[in-house]
Length: 144
Ligand SMILES: [Mg+2]
Image 1 (cartoon, rainbow, N blue to C red):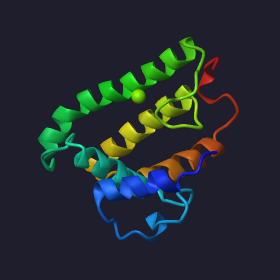
Image 2 (image 1 turned 30 degrees about the vertical axis):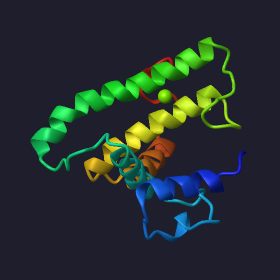
Image 3 (image 1 turned 180 degrees about the horizontal axis):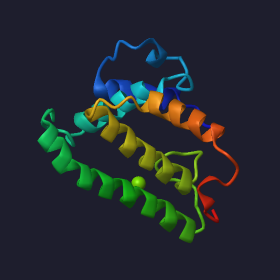
């Protein structure tokens, strides 16, 4: 596990103050709620020019979804390519492998997609995991 405090401080500097206590310098990322990570993913993307306009119409959100899904697939393909290259260490995030880096990209893309649609990703994850835990063995009759 790497020292994340410098990275976090850089992220805060990039997006401006959030007013959210867990992101105060010296605090840990571990307990940051999923929905706040979603907001942060959006803020970072916007601060880098990838979200120049506010997107608030349902029609525009629907138009953007296929592109966002393609970008999420693209990050999954980068996981595959990292594996094909023997999963070297990441040069962008020291202390992590390229597969870890690319899986992080997948999650970041999903977080941002959920934020701009005001999805309660945290609540949905919890509800779906509880539902999955309640299902019978090998439910659905599928081999895997
Ligand atoms: Mg990537």
